[in-house]
Image (cartoon, rainbow, N blue to C red):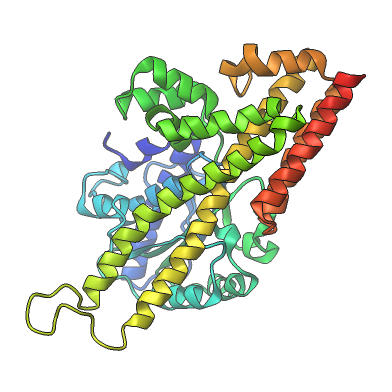
Length: 428
């Protein structure tokens, strides 16, 4: 792999569009250096390698990357940031992946590219103000100051307003790249969205994901094919399913709810087990991150020295550790919700497969490995309206979790509704 855009799986049209915009940005940077322009626009017919009239090539200061989970929103934004900073002498090679700028951007160590990732359930206004202030300076080593905001739908209203102010009057050398899920782009204010150029990514095909797992990750072709077929178009999830036994176990527990919900003796026990397993998985992920962060913070504050009086941190630094612990706790909550939400998506997809069977549609199943054991039998005895009620129960549970309802209560209610819907058909 050489060019950074090779990392975008199944997004060829998007890669061409971003590559053309990066060429326009390079030309604009040269004009800014010469004091010839104060706006982020270059006519298409002046960009090398771009046909006249191809409006997609124009550069702008704010972008919104949307797409379903796993489509590669943040990857696309990072690749574009690398192309903006790329030092390849030939514009045709922009985003070369080999120069120092490309390498450091992709490694997330470039001094002029900031990645903003909400650690908790939202991104506060104070953090956004600090980011905006830093991004308003002239770039130190690159052509642009680039700010990548992942999960921009988690911006609080005040944080979004702080970002909107600088997007409406952008510094000449700053580019904002926002990432948000396509299923809920309305979570970003209409005014902020209207100031951004929209890049809509699509779900990669099973064949694209399988090829990545085999060629890039070196996985066994059979395992890669299975993971690609059940991941729901999410490349990262396919990789975890293929390599992590815990991820496979979590999926099995989620799908087993469909059968357990039909019996009172197993329904709530299965629901409790799903919540517990999601919590355990989240704690394991968070603990790994927390340990490294805490040790880094303690070292930065002066702990661990070998001389006299240096083994302990200086006085007055305990507050910094408490603030870190607060952020870590918030992040752990978010990770737990995300893990559980992924399980619910799997469960909704299983009911969808059963619904497809019940109406006789010829559609590729989301869980092909469960067709014989769960989805086909369920689709044969349950009416479509009952399966739709099950899907709605799962989606309502996801919405309840998004509104901070305790996971146990939300999942218990979901299981009760699923059991009622399916048992009504069984008793009929």
